[in-house]
Length: 408
Image (tube, rainbow, N blue to C red; front, top):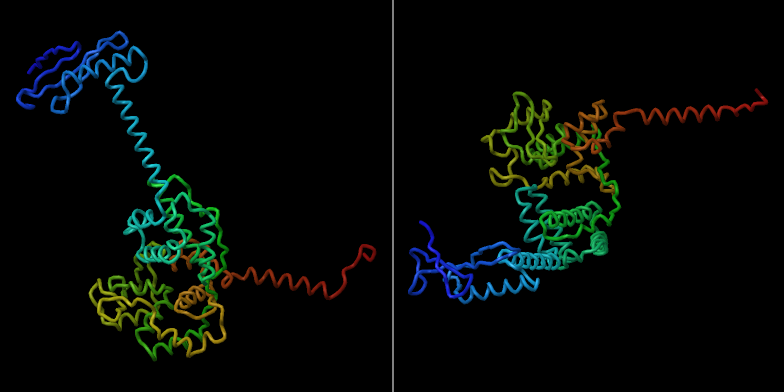
C-alpha cells in the first residue's frame, strides 16, 4: 500500500500516519525532514510521535542542521549526527573498559575468569595445585593489587617468601607459572593490556631428580618384606617395579585395562597425557590372574570402600623401607627410597641390560627424551672408556720422562 505523505505548517517537515496504531486520540505519525546538502535534496526520517517527535520538534531539528550547514560547525545531516553520537558512545565505552582493565585485580581475574575456565581443560590435580598456590601464596602477596600494578619486585618478594618457608624451587616455579598463565589468559581475553612480569624473574633450580635405585638384592629383600606384611601393597609395588608405572597410574588401573592373555596393561590419561601400553612380566601376570576380577570399570586396586581408589601409597611401604634400614643415615631426599624409587629402579635395570634410551622413554611415557637421559650412563660405556683412556695416558707419562728434541 502506498504511503500518503501529509505536509505541516513548517517548511520541510512532513509525516505519514500508521494505518492501525494510535497515539492518543489519533493515529501515530512518522515525521521526516527535507534539506539541501551540498546542492542535493535529501530527506531523513526522525521517528514516530509515540517516540516523542512532533511537528515543532522536527522543525527545530531541521533548523539546527541548517544552521550547522551555514556555520560549518557540527553535523549537517541526521546520519552524520548519529555517527557522531555513535562515535562518542564508543569512545565512552572504550574509556570505561580501559578504566575497568586498570582497576581489575589479580584476585578478580583468577577467581572470576581464569580459574573457572580451567575446569575441564586441565587435570584435576593441576587445578587443585593451582588453587592451592593462589590461596596460600599469591593471594596474600598481591591478590588485591591491580594487574597492571603487579611488578617483578612483587614476584621477587613472593619467591623469597616461599623459599624462606622451605618450599622447593620447583614449587616456586609452579607458582610463577600460575601467575604467568593468569596474565596471558587475561591479556588474550581483553581483560588487561599489560604483559606478564614473570619474564623478568628467575628461580635457580637444583637438580632434584631422584638418584637412588635398588640393587637386585635390595629389591628382593624389600618385596619379600612387603609381601609378608601386606599382600595389597606388595601387588602395587610389583607392578611399579616390573612395569615402571607411577603410583597414580597403578591406582587408576581398571580391569578393562588388564589383558593377561596378551600380557599387557593399557595406561589411560597418564601424567604425560598420552595413553600407552606396557607389558607384564610373568610374575605380574600371575599376580593379576590370582586376583578376583571385577567389572571392566572397577578399579583393580580398591581403596577402603569397594570401587574406590587408594588416595596415597600405603604407609606399609615407608615402614618397610625404614625397618630394612634402606634410608638409614641418608639426608638427601634424592637418595631416599620411596615408592617412586621402584619406577626409577625399573628404568635403571633396563638401561643396565642394554635397552636404548628411546625405548625406555617410550615405556615410561616420558614426553621429552631429556627426562630419560639420567639413565644413559648406566647402559653406555663411552664415559667410562674415556676416563680409562685418560688414565692409561697418564700412566704412560708416569712410566718415563718425555724425550726432548735434542735427545731424539
